[in-house]
Length: 182
Image (cartoon, rainbow, N blue to C red):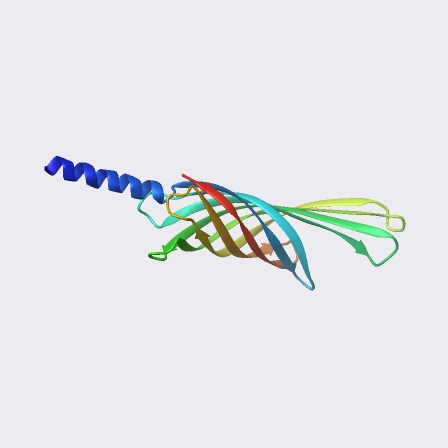
């Protein structure tokens, strides 16, 4: 009888651990708002992976986000393309809301952003610059996952401070997407 209780407890613990989604992978999209002297919105798409030990509410997330924009320059017939690739690592803490499929999380982290700016045009010639910048960030998000489903939705708000050589930028992003966890 005691062995059956231990077996039942072990099965329940294993189910809880599996349901906690120790690993998940996802795709997301959204908008990044970069501001310094002025503000610009950039459409964004990204991939992410999270790892969380069983029975612990903290975890680790890595992400790669791409955002870019094409714009016209007022001087002459010139066009500017800006492409940004952000690679980030974050530590997060989960807060599950009982009796709901919602889990809130918040975290901090850092990363590197690779910026490529290309200017082409009749009066401005052709130029291409590439720079790498470090960033620190804070994030706040929620995950929504129906019970026993491997697929869920994620929504995340992330504020980054990007360190440039002579100045700093603020980067505020809102992303939403789907993830597959096991």
